Length: 350
Image 1 (tube, helix red, strand yellow):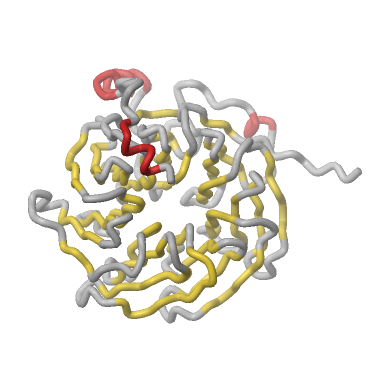
Image 2 (spheres, one colour):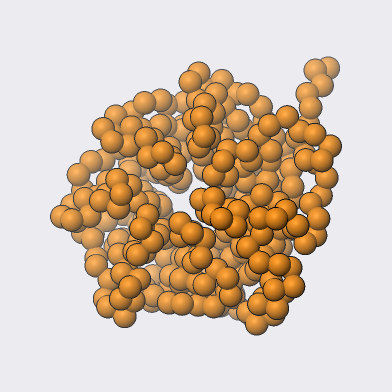
C-alpha cells in the first residue's frame, strides 16, 4: 500500500454549530488573524498562525453567515440571520455599529480603504455603508436579480462582485453608476468567490467546478471539474501555483493551478466542508466544517514541531495582545448566553 505522509492539522475547537465562513486578515505588524462565522451566532477571532483563540464577539441573536476583517485587523464585520450586520472593535470585542436589515444578511465585506462596508442577503439589495458616517442611510445599489450569497470588492473599490443563492453567475457592478457591467457565466450558483491577493484572478466554486477568471478582462482562464460537489475554493496567494477546494466529501483537496491535477487530499473533518481559505503568506490554509471545527493545515513539508499543539498562550511573538490582556478584555464581552439563538436563527438555517 502506498503510504503517504499524513498531514496533521491544528484543530481549533470552540464553535458549537457548523462553521460557515472564514476570513484571513492581511499580514499586520502584529501578525495575521483569522475570523470565523458560525451558526452558533458567536464569531471568533484567532491568531492566524497558531489558531489560538483571541476572543469571541457576543451580540448576534441568530446564525452568523459571513465575516471579515479590515486591512489592519482592527475591526471585524459580520452578517447574520438576525437581520443585522455588525462592525466590531477587534481589540476589545465591542460593537461599533449595528446596521439593521429587513432580512437575513448572508454576505459582508470591508472595502480595501476600510471606509466602507458592503452587505447583501435575502433582501436582494446590495448596500454600501459609509463607516465614517455610520448614521447616514446606506447607498443601495440596483436590485440584485436574486438572493445574495457572496460579495467582494475589486479594482481599488471601483467594482463590487456578487453572486446569488438561487441562480448561476457572478455579477460585477460599477460602484459609480450602480449598474452591472459584466456577468461571469456559470451553470450552478456560485457559493464562493475570492479575489486573489494580487488582484489578478477571481476564484469561484459553483457546484462541481472551480473556475479562475481574469479580474481585469473578465475572461475565463481555467475551469476544472471537481471530484465532488465543492462549496469553497481558494488560490495560493504567493505563487498562485496551487489551489484548494472543499465540499461534500469532507476532504480538503489541493490541486495544481496549471494542470488541475490533484496534489494531495487531506482528511480529518467529520462533516461537509463549507469554507476554505489560504493564509496571506500561503504557508497554511484553514477549513471550516459542518462538524463545528476549524482545521489549519501546513502547506510545506511537515516537521515534528509543526504537528505539535501550539503553546496555550500563543507565544509566537506575533499575537496582538498578551494572554493576560486578552483574558482581561474578553471577560467583558465573552458572555455565554444559552438562549441567544432566537427564532430567526432557524430562518437562517434554511
